[in-house]
Image (cartoon, rainbow, N blue to C red; front, side, top):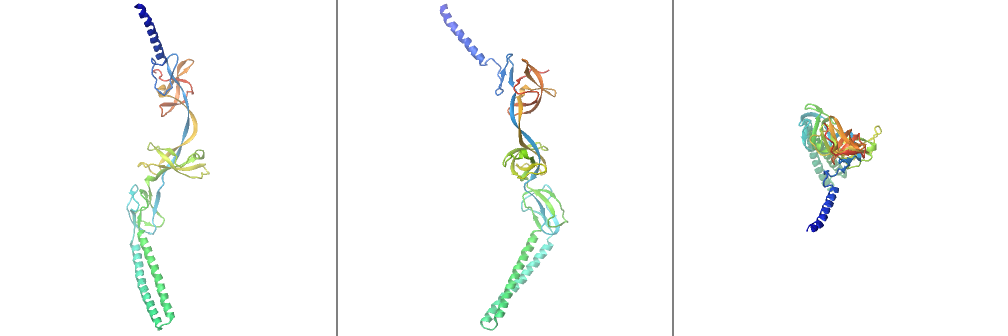
Length: 355
């Protein structure tokens, strides 16, 4: 019986040892490392990664200014005294809203005079038509000469022309009366008013300035080395430092001529509506620039000691402490090293506790 037991016990023990060895080689008894770090383990059992070198594109911040694509200056088309201004800076207006009222007495008097002229000419035109009809009838009876008929016809045509001119004068007077009510040409916001009731408005003089907040965009002069790579429709990041905001800006206009003084091209990128944005605010556009190399390590590899940053790098067979200059964190959970580390060096994933 003991011989039989020894016959099957040895193969079982051998199988157990074999399976244990395979499990150990597969890392079943090792500390688990987070995926994506490409971790390795040295002969002392310390987990490390190789400092990664990655090629990135540098974004150059170009200063710009917010401006409205749809903006206008309101002025009068006639000379008249301002009687009322219905809006102030910051007020919202809609297309067609009356925003300035001018004195209407003179315009109404001219319209009444023009209308009276039409009535007078209309009466004479009617009389001229009747006179021509009588002249034609008398000429058929040989009671008057043909010259009298021609004279009557000329009088009719003349009064007809006068009537047309008088009606045109009425139309002009009505237009002048309408011009005394200045209406908003766009939907937008009042930026500033340059006149007050009692002032005299003259043609071409600025009275109000308006802009449409839905058409705000950033305008920036981009140096030609960067501008030549930009295209219409390209989306760039736009930052507003005073508001601490980052917004997407889509290029909707590229001025095709460079400024010979600065060797730069003017680009205009539209922005989505934001009630905090105002024309004239400072903005920065991040424009893609040259390619650069960056060194990356896991965030867990860097330890802060006061205002210093420390990592453990393998040197002469052992991991030693080294001070480094760190940059920004990447979207995949790594940290950029700006100085103190070279690509390919071995870095501890979890450094020892620093006292």
